[in-house]
Amino acid sequence: MAVIDQRLTFERPIFELESRLEKLKKDASSPGIKEEIQRLRRSLIDLKKKIFNSLLPWETVEVARHPDRPQTVDYLELVFEEFVELHGDKSFGDDRAIRTGWAKLDEYKVMVVGHQKGRNVKERRLCNFGCAHPEGYRKALGKMRLAAKFGLPIVCFIDTPGAFPGIASEERGVAQIIAECLFEMSILPTPIICIVIGEGGSGGALGIGVGDRVAMLEHSYYSVISPEGCAGILWKSHEFKDKAAAALKMTSRDLPGFGVVEDVIEEPLGGAHRDHQLMASRIKHYLRTQIRELTKIPTSELLENRYQRFRQMGVFLEQLEAVTVTEVTAAELGEGRKI
Image (tube, rainbow, N blue to C red; front, top):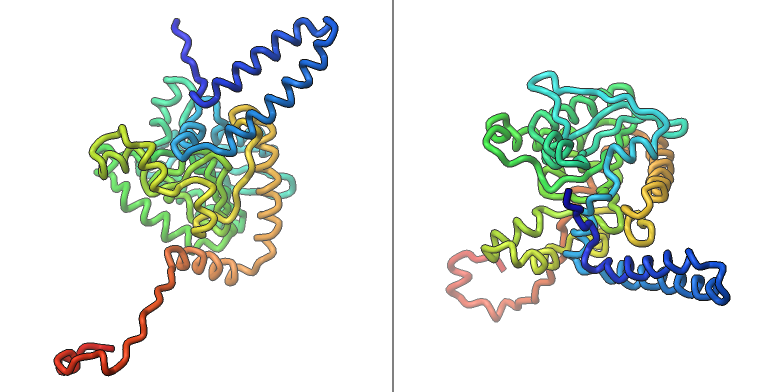
């Protein structure tokens, strides 16, 4: 069976240095080896910082799609003490691309909704590679309404290249149910926290992305379209995906300045795929802090803040040049044009 190399191109210098370090560890008893090991360890840390602090937008997309990157089911095990999965949309079926269920985080009971891509080929086909059908969003919305009924916070993990675009998905009303999710999440009377843990692509991501707090992991992306989709539309070729990724301004360096996300959760050195436990610990700390803060806010104020958060996106100031009356011609005044 062929072994697939999952190392990203820009990670190869890191793996080479790690390989040298492992060889030295086997001869740790030799004179002067311990000092060399310490030197290589410091060099390895510096190299990781240099590479991952200067990732290009397309390289960030590659990290967000890394096969070993933790997914929703990993965080369900590492972040929460208990999880009881809820299935089905009571209409068509159970979409495995979206997982929902009750969970416990310290003293808080919450509803978790998250995309799931799957690990191996069998799981990925079952989960549609994280691209949910309409029944997935109907399931998510139904479970979020249930959480609101009992006044429990909602936690959403976003990780999808987009909703499934096939004919069957369109026939069952994928656009309609995503629109309903946007509307209903904007008025649900309970705290909602959304975290982009990998890919945040198109309406498939936004379908569970309306919340009081929207955060993203350091090496994730959140965009109106995937880089390949953008390149296909604008340049008629996926070869320009790196150019599209840069133009979309979709990484954690850009989005906080646009007001799209409030917080960026730092990843372990080298990416979340290198240390699932540490990444889960940081997400747990973030959720604990935000839930404690949001549950103290009165419901009416919570909803108003959520409404204003999304209303203010895309707002910009435009400075108009002053126009004197003498600069306006008589013909323009006669036509009734406004000054």
